[in-house]
Amino acid sequence: MAEIISDGRRVHVEAYEYYFASKTIPGAGLGFDCDKDGNIFLDRLQPAALANLEIGRAGKDYTDEGVRDMSYNYYQPAVIRCSCGRELPLSDCMTNSCECGLEYNGGGQLLAPRSQWGDEFTNPSDADLYGPDPEAIFPEDGIDMNRTFSGLGADGRPWHES
Ligand SMILES: [Zn+2]
Image 1 (cartoon, rainbow, N blue to C red):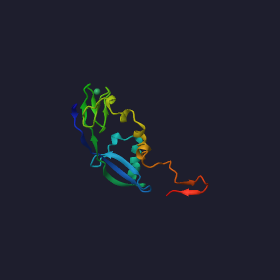
Image 2 (tube, protein in one colour):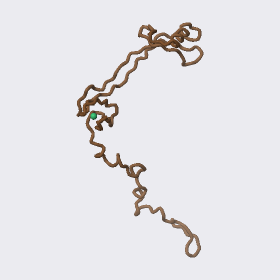
Image 3 (cartoon, helix red, strand yellow):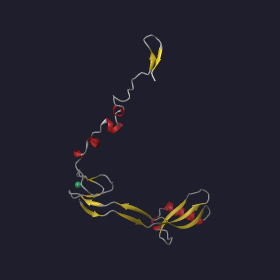
Image 4 (cartoon, rainbow, N blue to C red):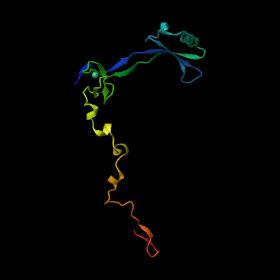
């Protein structure tokens, strides 16, 4: 088990926007980053966004909807220290590859080198790719796909075997 630098954890990000909904286009509107009291971060707005804010505040084409809670959560994966010294986030539950070539599973356990992995991973057979051979499903002593059940006999008369 590699050294764990930080555990995986859920991160909560608090975010708000001040929103003006379009009166003519359903679902459209103008949103501006703000604090939870609705103070828009004017110093972060580009000139075009400032112009949009004026349009929104004018109230002709937009309805002032006030503050919207845009807070969200995300999962920050655990980070381990590889034996080479690099930090490696365990963002995949199966394999996480370090630049040095070592690989770890999602729990931080070192995986065996790929050369030791089974053939099904590195050199797949037809059966791995396309499923089992039909002969395996219909063995020779089972159903004979070439067997004829009806035809013309040696005397020219039709025959049928049920
Ligand atoms: Zn490494």
